[in-house]
Length: 101
Ligand SMILES: [Zn+2]
Ligand SMILES: [Zn+2]
Image (cartoon, rainbow, N blue to C red; front, side):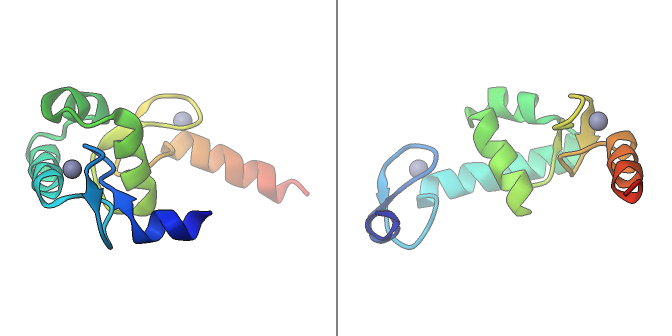
């Protein structure tokens, strides 16, 4: 099932057919611009999404894959965190819970 999609992929952003890449050339340029903007202005994923027309979920995916850096809501409590998907408090809380066993 997945093999077919690997060979004949579509751009994650505009759904145009692409081969061997997640994004077409145009969308890759937009992604780069969005990344520059995020670094320059400390923008959150919501803002990037609105400005560049990139789906927030896609930005979230890039962040998780380590392909993108911007502020994003903590996946546990929703607070805006820089360059990660979980805030320091939640991280600490999870570590504490892990150590309890
Ligand atoms: Zn595209
Ligand atoms: Zn949190």
